[in-house]
Image 1 (cartoon, rainbow, N blue to C red):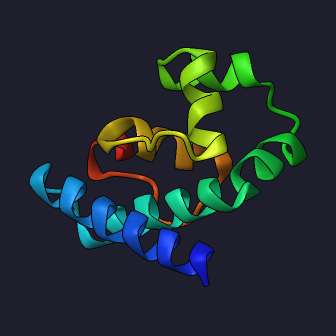
Image 2: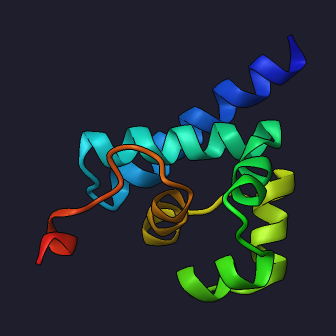
Length: 102
């Protein structure tokens, strides 16, 4: 029950945070899904299953390995463009933005 409450709170925060940056509904869902994966520890497992190292992921999305580690442990949450980049690297659905289509 505590985990479910925590996940609900994270989803609410994700929606509030992303709404301010004018993300599409698909992008909002992707960020929410990513945050749930991170809170449950599945984002790390997904990264490892894709044979992506922590440093490689951090370099690819433009942040530090310690930041990614904090995201993966649920200590902090990714926001906006970094969250979408992370989701794209992990292969989550609906992560391509219109600007990436070029």
